[in-house]
Image (cartoon, rainbow, N blue to C red):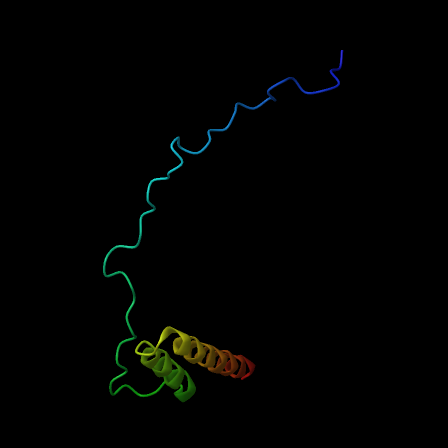
Length: 91
Protein backbone atom coordinates (compact mmCIF):
# COMPACT_ATOMS: atom_id res chain seq x y z
CA UNK A 1 0.00 0.00 0.00
CA UNK A 2 1.37 3.42 -0.98
CA UNK A 3 1.15 6.21 1.59
CA UNK A 4 -0.07 9.54 0.20
CA UNK A 5 2.30 11.57 2.42
CA UNK A 6 5.71 10.91 3.95
CA UNK A 7 5.64 9.70 7.53
CA UNK A 8 5.50 12.38 10.23
CA UNK A 9 8.94 13.64 11.12
CA UNK A 10 10.36 12.83 7.69
CA UNK A 11 12.94 10.20 6.95
CA UNK A 12 15.90 12.15 8.35
CA UNK A 13 16.70 12.84 12.00
CA UNK A 14 16.18 16.46 13.07
CA UNK A 15 19.15 18.81 12.59
CA UNK A 16 20.61 20.47 15.66
CA UNK A 17 19.82 24.15 16.02
CA UNK A 18 21.96 27.02 17.27
CA UNK A 19 23.34 26.88 20.81
CA UNK A 20 20.93 27.79 23.53
CA UNK A 21 21.17 31.25 25.00
CA UNK A 22 21.33 32.94 21.59
CA UNK A 23 25.07 33.51 21.60
CA UNK A 24 27.69 31.87 19.49
CA UNK A 25 31.29 31.29 20.50
CA UNK A 26 33.65 33.90 19.07
CA UNK A 27 35.12 33.11 15.68
CA UNK A 28 38.87 32.73 15.64
CA UNK A 29 40.69 35.57 13.91
CA UNK A 30 44.01 35.58 12.13
CA UNK A 31 47.06 35.16 14.32
CA UNK A 32 48.78 38.33 15.47
CA UNK A 33 51.23 39.65 12.93
CA UNK A 34 49.68 37.65 10.06
CA UNK A 35 48.77 40.73 8.03
CA UNK A 36 50.98 40.88 4.94
CA UNK A 37 53.27 43.83 4.58
CA UNK A 38 54.45 45.61 1.47
CA UNK A 39 56.50 43.63 -1.01
CA UNK A 40 60.23 43.43 -0.53
CA UNK A 41 62.32 46.23 -1.99
CA UNK A 42 63.25 45.44 -5.58
CA UNK A 43 66.78 46.68 -4.89
CA UNK A 44 69.26 46.70 -7.75
CA UNK A 45 67.72 43.77 -9.62
CA UNK A 46 66.98 44.48 -13.27
CA UNK A 47 63.33 45.29 -13.95
CA UNK A 48 61.44 42.30 -15.26
CA UNK A 49 58.79 44.57 -16.75
CA UNK A 50 58.66 48.31 -16.02
CA UNK A 51 54.85 48.55 -15.94
CA UNK A 52 54.57 45.62 -13.53
CA UNK A 53 57.32 47.01 -11.30
CA UNK A 54 55.56 50.41 -11.24
CA UNK A 55 52.21 48.82 -10.34
CA UNK A 56 53.79 46.81 -7.52
CA UNK A 57 55.50 49.92 -6.19
CA UNK A 58 52.21 51.86 -6.36
CA UNK A 59 50.53 49.15 -4.26
CA UNK A 60 53.36 49.32 -1.72
CA UNK A 61 53.01 53.10 -1.54
CA UNK A 62 49.23 52.80 -1.08
CA UNK A 63 49.75 51.24 2.35
CA UNK A 64 50.49 54.72 3.74
CA UNK A 65 47.29 56.27 2.31
CA UNK A 66 43.82 56.56 3.82
CA UNK A 67 41.60 53.55 3.01
CA UNK A 68 39.49 55.48 0.48
CA UNK A 69 42.64 56.53 -1.38
CA UNK A 70 44.06 53.01 -1.23
CA UNK A 71 41.11 51.71 -3.23
CA UNK A 72 41.85 54.08 -6.12
CA UNK A 73 45.54 53.09 -6.09
CA UNK A 74 44.72 49.36 -6.03
CA UNK A 75 42.21 49.75 -8.87
CA UNK A 76 44.74 51.64 -10.99
CA UNK A 77 47.41 49.01 -10.29
CA UNK A 78 44.94 46.24 -11.14
CA UNK A 79 44.09 47.88 -14.45
CA UNK A 80 47.78 48.34 -15.30
CA UNK A 81 48.53 44.71 -14.45
CA UNK A 82 45.51 43.46 -16.41
CA UNK A 83 46.49 45.42 -19.52
CA UNK A 84 50.14 44.44 -19.23
CA UNK A 85 49.36 40.76 -18.85
CA UNK A 86 46.99 40.91 -21.82
CA UNK A 87 49.76 42.34 -24.01
CA UNK A 88 52.25 39.73 -22.77
CA UNK A 89 49.80 36.93 -23.61
CA UNK A 90 49.49 38.26 -27.18
CA UNK A 91 53.22 38.13 -27.88
